Length: 268
Ligand SMILES: [Fe+2]
Ligand SMILES: [Fe+2]
Image (cartoon, rainbow, N blue to C red):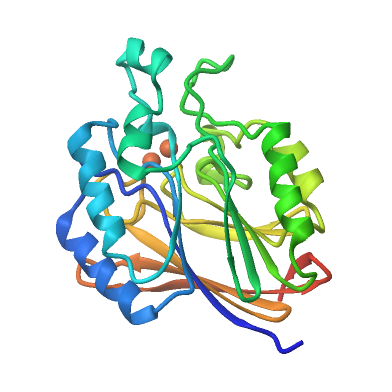
């Protein structure tokens, strides 16, 4: 079978309400030029889950040049509006994005199967409710989507919370049950995409490539510029390019090559 050329644009933490319109417009122009197969939108579309923020997010998504697989983040829950958070946590999401936040949404294209999961939770046993979690039911749905796919397809999980941290992000914590998830996805998935910590990097965890991008165009910076990732895959090779905003345009800050044997990845 001829390997398929795939290009995924990964964006996260749009945080409408704290967005910088000039950066958002520049990103849209870049994405149109890059002509990706899929845009992975890794959560935190809004700052406080308000109507106007969701409307702005929806208008932005409508401008994207490719199908988008969109998952929510913790900021897409009604924050400290506690009554709404407990009684109808995802109502605004459903209203504005026409999607079930609990469903595992799949996108299939030639050579690609991508599954989005909601890792944001309305509350948790941990005192920091911004930390997310992936549960056994979600892992079963992801596994089922991948098991149905042709063997060589690139298998991608799109989430908000991270499955791999660098020292700069250690204090934010991994997504809850990340170890169990990595164990179950090993050799069944290829790529895990996330956001949440507003830091961009990629690496290998348990044989899977994990790519994180920073906040695409909000002013909620955590010590590095706005960023997004361009991921290019062909056959058993994949490149993750982290693109940083330099005040004028996005440019490649770091480029890492990966290769797989089966669905087990290493850095080249
Ligand atoms: Fe965020
Ligand atoms: Fe977040």
